[in-house]
Length: 323
Length: 139
Image (cartoon, helix red, strand yellow):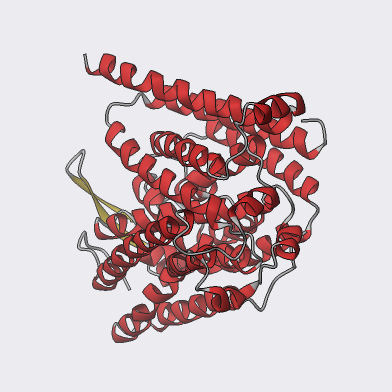
């Protein structure tokens, strides 16, 4: 019964999202359609795109929560592919979207001990410094080169999500000296099982070094980089999945801050499009959290992989001048 | 050094509380300033119709044709509808720096100089990014 209600509510939402995507794509890419829409007076008013963006990001927010990915990784390829905004502004808004989502989630995660400040602090210092470098590289490179690299990265992320098999509570037999020195350990209470899990890290140095690459990519493409944080923290450093996910989300609030400032100072944040994106995604996230308990994770996972493959291919083709 | 307890560390709770109020405060500010902007109650620096023509161009074109300042130059235009929105955006972007400040004292008190140093370095990195000193000028 509940599933039927969800289906009844979900289908019109999904249909509307698809309609918007199709409409946006048509309006941007097809000159004849654009002209026809112009004649019909559809493309005229300034408020049309912010309104579409608000609704689009609301849907994106729901999907992002259900899929367990940050908003930026879906926002940047989809909005740059199907909306009329230049990639410079999409990356600026994408970082603000990822930042707002991470900052909003931060307090709850920190209070519940699902994000570890002690684990996040050293990692954030590396990632946020490198995100500045990434943002500067991204703004200096020609748009088509960034678009091609973005497309390739998004396709890689899709494959990573498809292939990755995270471990709920990895076994860390020999914590390393660096992890011990930095006190990267803790205990978290798992509400679903009612058990307390003690955790510590291993392979801390290679794990920390990975955040150099993650930081550069986050800054360069305006992505949140949660897709990379979680596997490194969980599979490489041995952090339990729930703490890895929580710390990753919190980490984005620091990494994205440094990159967001670079884009902000360069004039890449246009309030007319950035604020509806942030607000839409935030509201979508609230609804998504409520739907989370009822959602079918497998279906959502494959749906996101499909969307990322599609968006990655689109970005790649656009960068190559084909799409 | 160990945090071998399910109890949330005190500095983490302080960080969490500051983040909560700062984040929702800045989002509320953004919503209000955006409404003032799009309703036309506060005249924008770049007219709305012009923004929609320029947002498909590289940032360099937007800056030139819209006569938009970079870095902290927007402060001079804070009375304009579009740049008024930057108050909320900047508060949101600055929350992490503000939340890091109490961490320095907290870690010093706990005699954890490594973490106090990390907190200082992070503030310096973020302040450097926020300063507007670095920038490639876009495309």
